[in-house]
Length: 419
Ligand code: GLV
Ligand code: MN
Ligand code: MN
Image 1 (tube, rainbow, N blue to C red):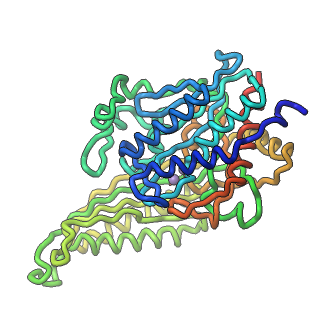
Image 2 (cartoon, protein in one colour):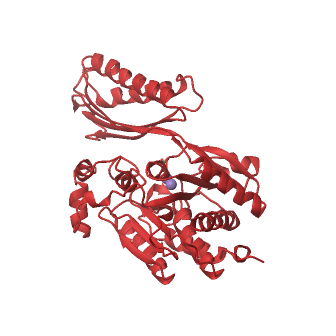
Image 3 (cartoon, helix red, strand yellow):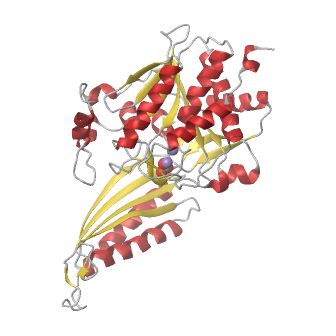
């Protein structure tokens, strides 16, 4: 028996850790909410650091809170193999999104250690800051900064809904000793990056595949829209001449749906996920509305066509209603092609273990989208029940997770053994 055949994931311990982390939440179970800089986010980080320290791994944190957990290889000078994901969770989420790729990666390293493996290259788990866009309206803040896609000065100015900047938050939580410029990684710093994640779609379960290998990650974009109308008394303001910000927003939300439906691509999806109004009183005409719109596609040209369609609709809807608008493209990222050699290596790993796999597209975005800009990157998916995600009943079984972590462990060690 080779040492690789001794790699045995401790699925029970991993499940227990996933359950424990899920209890660190801003809401009672089964809801998981861990928004960047919340008390739950800070406690979740401490929980992961404690697990890493217990495994004898070296822990470091950068100026934006990305956490690096390293198992030093025989030749620490060689660029390391990176893996990891995120532990922040959107409001009303479940316990597996991101977490499987973080706690699973630490368990993968522990299993490799137990099997007596001692690879050439170091293996590093990265726990990325704010993969989710909840606090600042933009996702993957940590990985964008690592890759240099988000400039440090722009990151520092990001504001949450209370107007508090990333820079003020960094000071408040004690991360501001170093400047954000220090976060960016050199482009030869990692040999490869492999992220394990739940699929967040139904295909693996429907088609009965235990493993998905991601070949492409869809192109996401986000729009932020502020509408200003004129408020007033709901009884005293007659209908003609009203400048109701909510009604303009409502028409725009329908236009967003139409832009996706008419894009010409079945892969275009669009969501108005945030819609807040002021003053929010039943007897007052809404004077302001704030909308945040998420639009994605597997191809840039249909995504961009739909974006332009929405921007045109905003102008056409606001003008006759006398509503002023401020529209910002917060992000419009290109689709990502995963590294073909890594995809083949993971496919070969699955074949060696005897696991069927499906090559597929990720419709969700991930920190992998940005890591791909600095090193060869690929993703391993496991099924999740009914494809549900971003909801409290998100679920992957202990066995499904164990299978994913086994593939991850094998892929990591085979990459870490390359000269
Ligand atoms: C990540 O959470 C995404 O929205 O795709
Ligand atoms: Mn998510
Ligand atoms: Mn995720």
